[in-house]
Image 1: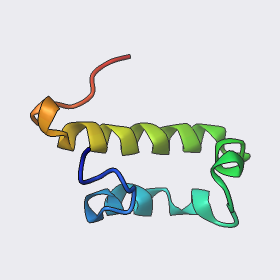
Image 2 (image 1 turned 60 degrees about the vertical axis):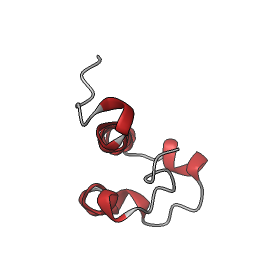
Image 3 (image 1 turned 45 degrees about the vertical axis):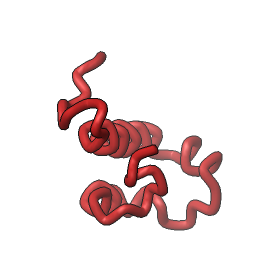
Length: 67
């Protein structure tokens, strides 16, 4: 398991801050995924997962380059 798994790791702070407007009044993950700004939610999710993927020791810091 990665040290970034909890989602509140300091390394992910910049991604969360960049998209903080997406979390205003959002009580659950279900509501987050179906909010009005679907594109913003997807962009956040991709950036968040890329950060986790690039920090994984198995990936040796490589960026996610899959379509």
